[in-house]
Image (cartoon, rainbow, N blue to C red):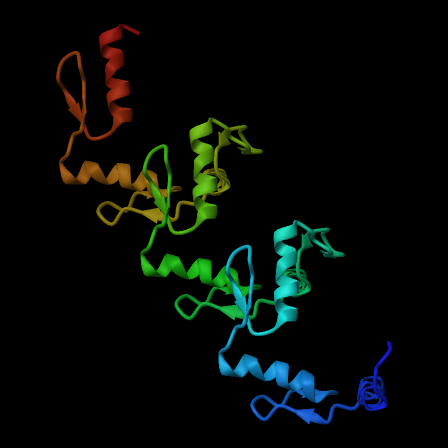
Length: 243
């Protein structure tokens, strides 16, 4: 590197010695040159003179703008050695890497659920506010997270990628398969408070509970006889078919 003055060369040389005589009074960060300290200090004033012409995002330092600009070029030079996922910025790769270490430093104050990234915690927190910004265009069902909407949408495509290894029954969502699997274990965690009858799924308990309310929403189209459960109507219908 060349300089027009010997003094400039002398000041530059400090960077190679490891010395950092210029210390920020705000945060204690040290620099090898006074000029670098001056540029750094803008971050404490709130000024953001470097503006991105692509999206209008502003930065306190030109260097940060330069690093940000890569995100608009499509380049992703920072690659994760664990999974091959690529990022436009080294900082994003660093934050992503925590997911491979098992660390979960971001903890939800509402429920104690922990996440490896602050962004994931932020997205999770919406579930506690009651907001449901992600709406299904097919049925109008709303979700607090975009990921949940994506998983729900499979139900409209007819796909059933989650298959039970016990009976071959297929489901559109992994969660539904998990709930179904309890039926094969013999567990019956859902107990009726009225009669003590137990069920392997909460949905079955809900349907059973109608029998205690006196409601009979399932009506036979042949004779008008009503039942509290659809299954009972189906069994009754055989009387009309002669089977």
